[in-house]
Image (cartoon, rainbow, N blue to C red):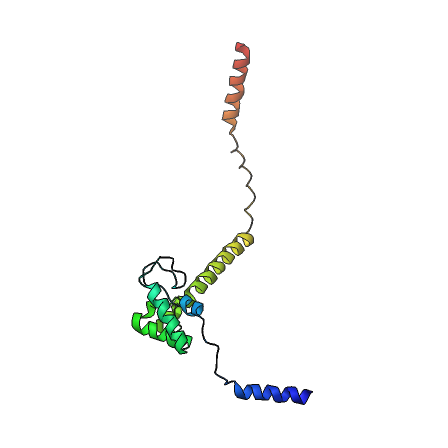
Length: 158
């Protein structure tokens, strides 16, 4: 039985070419392209009735899939006609890699900044204890005598 299974598996591998992939679906290709009507949505998600841009693109995608073109070929044709703006996500070529890295770098930098602030707050030394009020300067004898005399006079007046 195992020889039969191995033979069938080997035959299947010979029949199916290694690079063959399933043909793209209409949905996959439409989601990879941005509608050019100005709505900012993908061709599939464009909600304009009788869109002057989305409807012809959908029709052309269906024709290309029917001819057997793969997703990369279809996207390359639209990219050549409309430029990079037709793609719903930037490619990894040239300067576009910054569009992929920037959000992750911003999140990482924000997390690092928050962790440093929290670390400083938790490691901050406690405030020093309040200092004792300074002792009043010693009064000289002359002032003490004057104070005692004035208090005696005050007591007599009452």
